[in-house]
Length: 475
Picture (cartoon, rainbow, N blue to C red):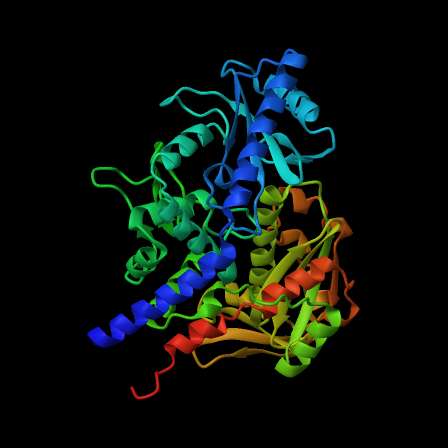
């Protein structure tokens, strides 16, 4: 046993060393980035003076400031901090005005409030307004904790720990669960850094995760955990705001995927765990080929995309996906799976069902013969009713029933008449009149459809995870 553990540890160390060489930024790049950060800060301060901005201070935070970024993925987050007494409308006005002076070429993005994305000396920069709140004060916007996150991590992260943070981010990235945006619902960068800091290394984190059971509560002794809604899979209190759960954005599905991968890697380390899988673009033809193999049917709901940022859009899109699937089940269809996707102009939800159409006959349950409503049921379903196929008749349990002819049988026709009752989210609800419901063969072949088909048909676990579950030779 000890020999096997020693061999596994040696193999893990060899893999991690090779990966670190690939994903770590070179020393000269880190020096260059430090110079860029300095010049960007100077530009922000100069621009603030030039337009008499009430900015209190600016701050570059995140992995670009601390160095825990992957070599091929580095952006700069510039926070423009204003007095806490400034009204929200004034924060947006002054913040965007200053951001435009810093980044003349830009595009407007939206999160809790607008911010600008542009470039500076070859780096993508997000210029984000926020409030310069005092430590311990209640944050007024989502970014107000950022300076304290920066301070907390900068005081604790060593070069060795930064190596482990990069390994962890690459591991999660290749697993498809890195990123806290609503579309991904994975591990945020801040959450990754806190977990590596807590367990000392990626290996220590993976070893600890082998025993986790969802929901996972990682609370410091003496702290009461924040509220735990049913969808929350992991609770880790923010060290600078103990009432906040850092892992709120992480879905249970992605946490479970990580737990399987953690156990697999600890049991059988694999270089593939750090390799980004090759992208497989999906289109209508590929979806039709897969449907033909599976002997199922796929229906596609399309909607125009409302003017919403992803973090607002995707929760509503997921709700619509669930609502459509639940409606199909209620109407008698067997749902195999579903997926959703969005592009710049359209939304698509795909629903895979075991059959395209319901049987012509539909059994309608009636009351027991001994109660008063039995007479009403018999009167309603008199033999001359046009849709009646058989009945009324008495069932073995003593209740009445009839068999009627379905006026609509295909899932597209049946669901179309029910769209008004499907829970779609308030912004999507207004677009129902412009919705289209078609079988896959007649759906628009757009990127949104490809993304939805990818969710439907590419949800299998990585091969290296499955290989770890297989018996080793000689066992």
